[in-house]
Amino acid sequence: MGSGTPEQLLGLDSVRLAPHLLGALVSSFIDGWLVVVRLTEVEAYDGASDPGSHAYRGKTKRNAALFGPPGTAYVYFTYGMHHCANVVCGPEGTASAVLMRAGEVIAGEDVVRARRGNNTGPAHLLLSGPARLAQGLGLSLRENGAAYRQGTAGGPGPSLGLENLATMPLAHCRGPRTGISGEGGGDAYPYRYWLPGEPSVSPYRRAAPRRRGK
Image: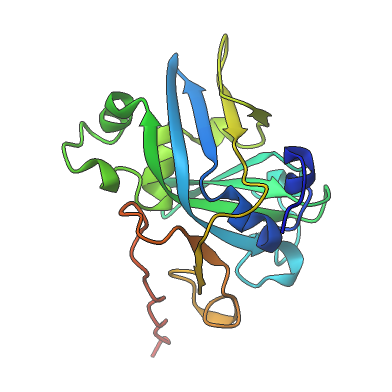
């Protein structure tokens, strides 16, 4: 299904936009360094109607960027150590967003390795997972609420770029989101999308069951 221009694509809700982001290029110009990443895995979060979304219980100071205009970056801090990054989409105020889960480094591999602790592992694992991807791009809460510019990121100051959204989605797979328990996980929410055969795609992980207090 073709949907037109990047502006029109970003105006779609997250479930419809997500497959169009597979193969798209996300770039960051942070601290004077350019990194370009090709997305291979994403997850959709559908706002107030989605129990897995940060917006499920309404707007807060932490999730305010989720309610911004399409093309806004929603970056959050989790588990006291990791950042994760999303592309906000749909009409402003609906809090629909797509989490960037994994990607392939197109430019700036040395920068990515340095940011990941001088990682010497295989290239396909550098950005395999949302925390690794955000770290490789150099994203933190400083970029929360910033706008993704159309095209490649560039100076003079910090910026984010988003380009090559697929008018016709590439062949892809779809399944349940990883690591989410309760109503927001499982087969009822097959909102994870990935490119088949891509080694950078993160392994599927079921949510660990929560233990009740004794």
